[in-house]
Image (cartoon, rainbow over all chains, first blue to last red; front, side):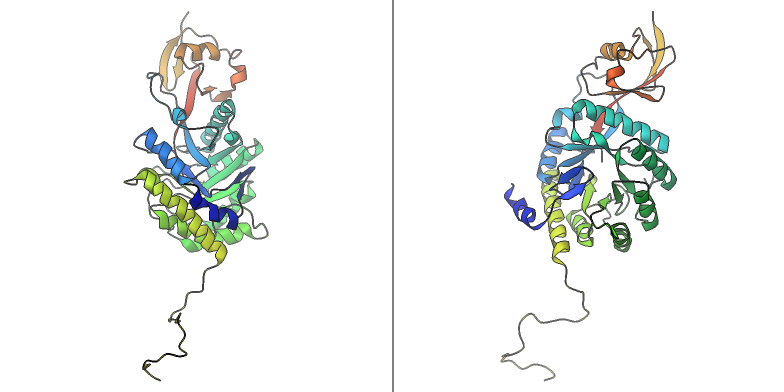
Amino acid sequence: MTQATTPSLELDKPLQLGRHVLRSRLIVGTGKYADYPTMQAALDASGAQVITVAVRRERLIDAQGRSLLDYIDTDRYTILPNTAGCFTADDAVRVARLGREILEQLNNPGKEWVKLEVLGDKKTLLPDPQGTLEACRELVKDGFQVLCYTSDDPIMAMKIKEAGATSVMPAGSPIGSGQGVLNPNNILIILQMLKDGDVDYPVIVDAGVGTASDVTVAMELGADGVLLNTGIAHAKDPVKMAHAMRHAAEAGRLAYLAGRIPKKLYATASSPWEGVISYIPGE
Amino acid sequence: MEMELIINGQPRQITARTVRELLDQLGLANQAVAVEVNRQLVPKRQHEQAQLHEGDVVEVVTLVGGG
């Protein structure tokens, strides 16, 4: 299965995300799978090197219960713990520290970073801008590399970068909504603002991916990567969709690097007019 | 002697005196878990020394699937 990734390795440089150098530009979540073996196969098919996890209370009753870590090769994947479910800066900082503590025990390279989410509302799962900034500053001070979930608001994205985030991760559309990149212009403005004089500053489109073309759109806009979970986990065939997402990320990235043609209103023939033997209307 | 702690949101009667003893009693001594007492992280290297007191609020967390 590696032959498919070979061309892009030659044509693209790796993604530098904090202290991590990544060949895959896809970061995938481990949530919402019907079962762990399916998750395992989908993670493998996605080609992702970084996978996100959540921090939750240990179930104290069922000691026999299978746990996520039984199904994750921690030597293969860099784990990116999130602060999902936190609605205050304080809680997000607590959860980030708890996640780091576990990754230190596992000696996983992900122990230095966190995917920061401070949510403002349970229905939209939109971020709380103030709490996000506050937590971002606190975590940066505490030595974390902060990969920060935010809305597609360019000014907020700028403020998060200024707060010291390693990467700003604007949502394409609401988490788990499958609506794709709803406002490509905002993503473009974010990319231009954050990469102005700092071209390698990583911007990852996080959330909203419904299918492969959504990933391609984000990458064609110039995003450095895409983070997704539900689009794979809840597809009818998650493993097949994971393959599709991997190809979509590579296709979009290469198309971005190759440079698309300008859009024009009228047609331009690909075959020459010269030497045509037929009647041409108007001539 | 037993004392009452709030562990992961539930009141429990516990004889453990340290975080390490608590994890032993919960059967989690060798699991990848992180522990907070009264909202303060207790790093693993301090588990043996970290004393527990009546009414302490303890969180024991692990990693689960997430996005």
